Image: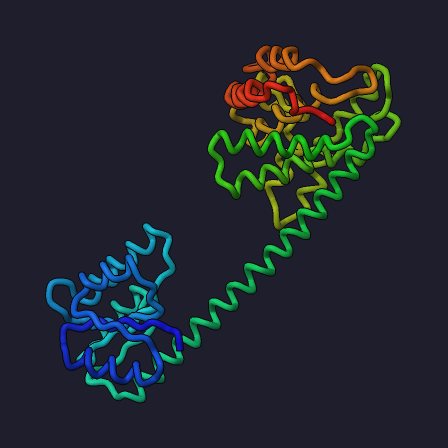
Length: 337
């Protein structure tokens, strides 16, 4: 066996007996005489199970376990399974120990076979739990990977409706994620806004191709059809219960910070933050992509448009981040290729 067991007790006889029994059963055993020594030991060594006496001088077992858990949480360490040694039949002690997260209690003086069986069974249980957790994580990643593939495929289908916006959804998603990252979003929220960006135009599925691909100026009636895509997109995405925030980017990416956008005329902080980020990313890609009526706009003009729209069309914070990204892109690589 490779499992490493640490026994902590101020009684030398208990340490000697536990060491003999567990070593004979094939475990690697370390014996320590105090909680303080344990707290130093775990900083430098891996421990698979801890046998901890409750009654010890200076730090008792409960105090030791509390400090151990604090250290584990602060250092993002996996919690070490704990079995308490106890010399008396005390229900209150058992309640306290179990509330702290102990897995079991063993009476002293212990019976060798009982000690071996309890340690072995608990280690088997922990191993099974960890194997199950690893399998769940693996399957979750598989499902997430499949979901992302489906979303990418859907985004490509949306972009394919417009002969002049190939790759638009992916670029908007990339720009939105980068703005969110620089603004301080967690990794999980960055990935969330990336998915929102990929699907922000999903409502265009319901807009006639002839309107989307019209090379000249749209009539008022045609523009009204275009303006239906945010609500339509939100209605589609609201049906995905597993990702309730997906609809945010679709519904509100055409709102303006000054309240003159659509479909709901929201303004300022009333517009969800993710939608304000996607609005900047979407406008940037629109200006840096080829269209039927023009080529991509020069970088300096794009910069001027973002500056002009800051505080009116765009949230100034996110426009400023996009301007920083532009300033770093000295060779103007961030555009449709």
